Image (cartoon, rainbow, N blue to C red; front, top):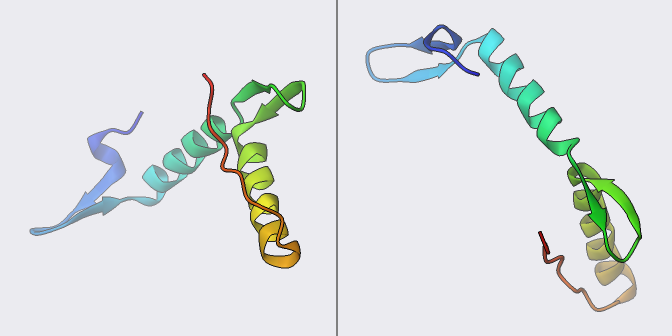
Length: 75
């Protein structure tokens, strides 16, 4: 969790300190590592892999003209 010590604040602004940025990066990596069971693939995939699979579908659309079908979460 972020605390007030993780922020650097001036008179009109606030930003994350170096330690705060590291904490946010760790939290994002942990969230992207969360896995769900993919119905079509029949196995568990992480959110990071789901994003990668969507990017590959967009590449196929651009290069091959394959129709793009957007991912719709079922959970």
